Image 1 (cartoon, rainbow, N blue to C red):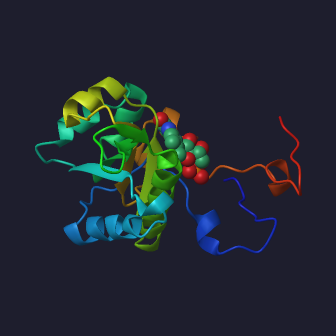
Image 2: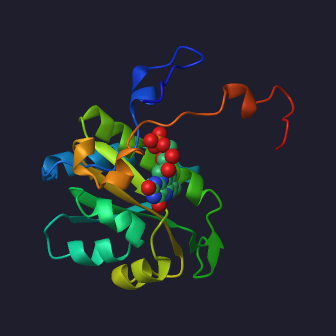
Length: 196
Ligand SMILES: Cc1cc2nc3c(=O)[nH]c(=O)nc-3n(C[C@H](O)[C@H](O)[C@H](O)COP(=O)(O)O)c2cc1C
């Protein structure tokens, strides 16, 4: 198992959270789900535009198969066992003041990332795990959810309680561990940056 030793003092939640692929058979309650969305709700955003959107399906419900089908097979094989799949979307454009003309919301991705960070932090607090996926078919998601042009699909997130590593297919078991990170010096700079 990769040791996650912080270089500087930091709350334990930041190094304890990671993205497993094994999920327990538990379902997610409405209370848990709403708690995740409530956390996302309080994220900061440019001019308080709150451009994040979350569409979800719960394992076994009428929407589940459609959500799973949007994932690339390499993700679907494990994510189909999650308790919930949440599609994270952002509003990229909004009408200008007193006009129907659309103007870009230039911070939509940053703001939606902040909302997703609140969501996974709250999940961790509740003893749940999350695993974001960029491996999905954008066109399938757009068709399934009837996504308008002024929204972007950002990710699909698997949520649930963590299951045992042994429950995974053998080839995934070796990857079922926390990953490391670049040192702080690699992505920060005082007055300048060293570009890679
Ligand atoms: C936007 C985004 C897309 C990702 N796409 C995938 C994916 O398609 N499949 C996958 O198994 N993991 C995916 N991940 C998980 C990352 O690989 C993982 O977060 C990263 O390696 C750091 O590991 P950790 O979350 O366990 O700390 C994605 C994560 C993010 C934030």
